Every structure is written in structure tokens, then in C-alpha cells.
Amino acid sequence: MKKLLTLILIFTAVAASAQIGERRNNLSIGAGGGFVMSNVGFTPKVNQKMHTGMMGGVAIRYVCEKYFKSICSIYAEVNYARIGWTEDIIDNNDAPVINPTTGVAEKYSRHMDYIQIPLFANLAWGKEEKGFQFFFRAGPQVGFCIGETTESNFNFADRNMNDRSNKVVAQDTMKIENKFDYGIAAGLGMEYSIPRVGHFLLEGRYYYGLGNIYGNSNKDYFGKSNFGNIVIKLTYLFDIIKTKSK
Image 1 (cartoon, rainbow, N blue to C red):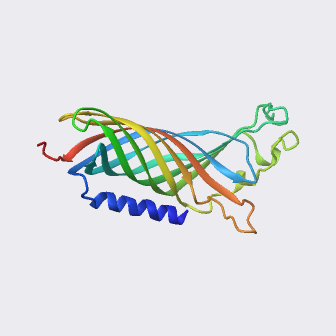
Image 2 (tube, rainbow, N blue to C red):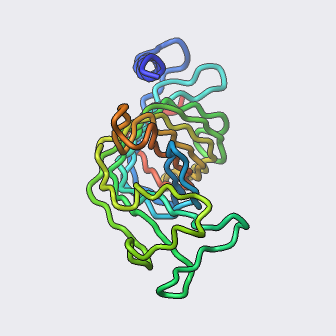
Image 3 (spheres, one colour):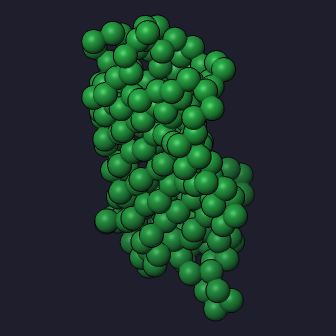
């Protein structure tokens, strides 16, 4: 995984300096936001639904060249994102587990607020000046947890352990141990450009975490606890520097 991250960073640097194709010098900045669905890959397994939250931040893009029909650029963001996990508390018949004290189905979610910084090598195909283009981007992402909250409708001492099909509950009372997160993200999207107005980007993205939120040594409870995020994001960019048309 470390070698893969290194190769992605090298590819990004080469894309920035390559002069093989038609030279471009386009710099755009902007902002965007969207919807993020997340979970945590626990080992031992924890039954989960997708945790939902919002994300948004600033973006910057530098287009360096057009190689044949591929428009090459470097794209980066600084985002705030609310991610985490939501437990699917069910019995062996896939029915919700009822708390004996409250008489309602037990619910538990952990919300974690992150600052995330992805850095992408970006390839696009289509219209540069006006119209649609499609793009693919991939690269490393780092993040830092700035806060966490727990949402539940039962007291931990009174939870219904007898009816649960999954009895792994250590995570419910454990605060995050590793606030720094890192991994690989990739996305597909569509961009519509309007001269003198800007660029509108709609993207679907997936992030796979290579780090763990809890310790994973032999003495720790979890062997793995990494994030998986699905992002749907809309971004607006406007040009700061633009290559003059021939």
C-alpha cells in the first residue's frame, strides 16, 4: 500500500511537469459540497447500516497539458466531512432488537468530524471551453478527526444482549484512538463548462482507508477498523489563469 501511494504521488508530480502534449496553464479555484455515506470495516465484524452525513470545502485545479484527447490536471480539496458508523442492531431473525427498559428498538451511531485533504491526478475527455467533459481521478487522501459524538437511545448497562445476533459491543464505549487517517480515493464524474461563468462538476467518489481508528496490535480488541466512504459531490470552479486560445 505504501508503494502504491508513492507511485500515485510520483504520477501526480510527473503530470504537473510533463510537456509531451499540448501545453496548458489553467488554474481554477472554487468550492463544493455533497453527501457522504460511510462505515467502518471492523474485525471482528460489527453489523452496520450506512452512516450518512454532509461534507464540503474548497477546491483547486491546475490543468497542465492535453495529451492526444486526454486533458491532464492536478486536483486537490480541503473538506470538512461528518463520517462514522451506524449499527444495525438485529436478532437472529433480522428483526430489530427491543430494549426491555424503553420498549423501543435499540439504535446506536458514532459521528466523527474530519478535515480531509485529497490530492488527485485527473484525466478528462470532452469539451475544454464550452460543453461537457467526463473525468476520472485517483490519488491519496489524508484526514484528521477534530471531534466525535455518540448517539444512542439506551443505557449501555441496560442494552439487550440476549437477543442480539452480533454481540460485539466494545466499540460503543471506545473513543477513537488514531485521529490521523489516510487512504486512497478514486472518482468518476461529469463537468459542464460555460465561458466566463465557470465549471460545474458532479462526481461520485469512493475512499478506502488504509489506517485504523483503533489500535490493531495483538493486545488490542480490533484487528482492523478502517473507513470506507462513498461521496456524491457538486463543485463549482472559476478560472484564475486561463490558457489563451490559438
